[in-house]
Image (cartoon, rainbow, N blue to C red; front, side, top):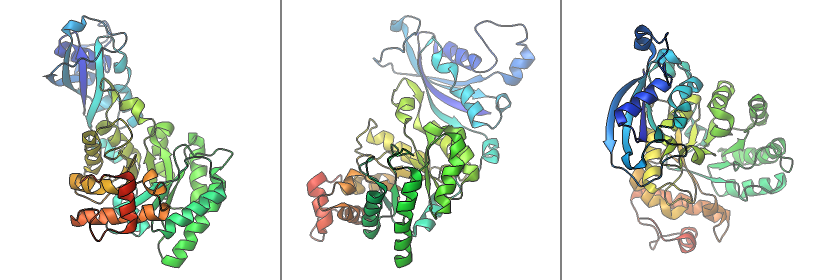
Length: 413
């Protein structure tokens, strides 16, 4: 049995609209048909498990909604779907719990909030191959926050310019670098050219220091190209690939996971289209389970004080969701990004209580007035101080961190 939790609004009584949703997403249609027997319904019909009325909001109903808006009710609805309807298959699960229900005209709002999945999914899907422990091992960073960055500018650097930037970053002690999601396999800086330019820099650093930072090459492409793109990176000695989960699809991620020899960095580009509306879509808590099942080792959660739409409360709940065991395991690294800089470390660490995170600072590193190396140094010092419970900016503060505070401040204590 799969249990799905929704936020719904309707001019119909909530119990009735919950029944409509359950029926439309299992055995029912707009009219009772002859072969929808009592026995068939007993075996395959979705059932309403719980209905909880919630306070109304002033949000307008979705386009095409029927009924009197003045009579609209809002509530949390839990529906149970028989596993026999779709089996332990993520794409077919989504057809049931997040398919045509968004189009039901009686629903003035409907959002999938959470999922409770049976063990059959864990038996079919291997999930992350590396997770937190494997990522730390490859990075040579057994403790402390994993500090990374995104290539900036996102697009426009030649492969040689990219290699120069990577050299500066690894010399500064960065753990992780990723392509921007906008940098795929375009003609200006194709994947093969980036691999040829970047990996010698990383290998030379590893030969000198014994530690090889991780570079996540964006291999997002048509599903038929994922294997070849992955193999291109791995054959050259790369240790990570990046896939945009919503762009290749969950089935595409699972396809890549079956073949991958290195961690899969899961970017959530396009997630706002699924979740930004409070009235329609799929919430992060539900979505992240499916991404982890499909096999991502790292998953973007956003970070506090970000440049996107999510509140700190939403971000922190996303981080907690990714850190919660799924079927007792499926360890995935939460990736904090969007507007991150050194001064957010104290508030973030106080809220999440762990350094088992990958913190990506784009502008917070590349925009440091003393250069990218100083940006990396400021991030490393800030997270170490946060873990020790020490305030930032005191007498022992390094010039790199002090300049970061002057530039991006104030510090979130």
